[in-house]
Image (cartoon, rainbow, N blue to C red):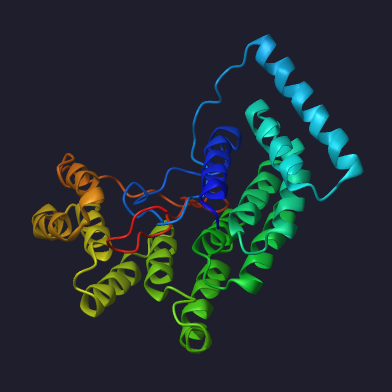
Length: 297
């Protein structure tokens, strides 16, 4: 991907954070366990207000791009311009059409597909969102944003076992897929995501089992150490959590140390675990884990 295109995608993803307000829920561990790729997962924020002049200008730009697309429906410059204008306007429904076209024209850039899925979810089309995620996973089975999005959808539909099964199947098939294309599926990241699903259902023992396994397999990875420390502190086991926080800080890459330190120095009072009730299961936005030592491109 060219540097210019990467910059444009980052700009659009940043706008999507503002436009797709309410798509995701505050993550339990997401402040640290971030992806090394630009995240297409929106977080709650406030859409900045536009002046009448700015809104009119953006609407005129959108109309101009739409006229170009009537003549050249695959003109990616016009598609990107229309998408950017719609996102700046906060018009999620209007962003769907250019996202569909860009996702189809750029199958190697799953960010468009994830944004499309989130836009469809925001407009109430959960089945369309699920199909968009599955389409990404059909060609890129290890895409963590798509896995996360689909798992969240299952949780929101009170289908936690479907989310667990989805991730367990990906882990089970990873070895075979990585034989044909090494590194295609990041097993550790999916295991961390599975741990988040267990946490959303208050299945702490199963989550801790996953984190202990990851710590044993890769003792230099700060992520499962931090995750385990946060669970223990949440359960009121602050003395057990303290050395884990210290280890997580020492292992964290330089660009994440401050975040880990902040989490480690929060009040040691145990945080009550979210309570699940029929039809009202907690649905955290599961973070995409950070491959250790890597930064966003």
